[in-house]
Length: 222
Image (cartoon, rainbow, N blue to C red):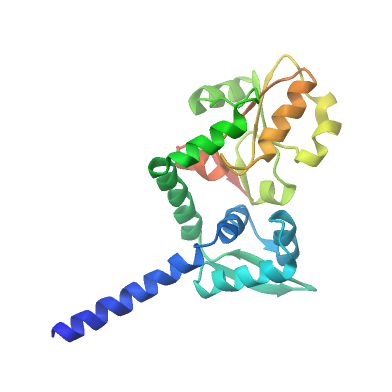
């Protein structure tokens, strides 16, 4: 019986270690973060993570082997997506664990943001109240494809690359909060910097759509 127990436990932990192998690379974690926002082609993933297509494909192969990512051929391109919403939930919990256990996470973020204005944390209840009252505007500065997958209710889709052309439509009398993929996404940081230079009262919402939903605030799918 003792040998059978040992074999059973060894086999189980061997399977669990496949997940560990899948997320053991910084680049693979970044790929998963992007895919948590919606499906992407291999070419798009390579471009966003500053990888060659060959390297991106190798990382995606490891993620597929761990059953974290699925892919399929759509026309001329291979499209990837998270294998399950549980993968996105796991990724978010991994981030929260790292924030609680690794002091370097906070230090790196603080050093990056210390000279930037409008990056202080915004209380979700206060922001949501102002959005409903019309005294604040919430901008989703992610690519439009991500907005279509899922977005914070009441937010406007203004991808970062289109922001400067959209500024004439915004009021300087209202507060403007920009959000993107979460606390370590820099799209909202760039958006706030652009708007503040133009005289807008802009702030960053560091929550992702997943964070917002987990806190009980409304999101829209599709």
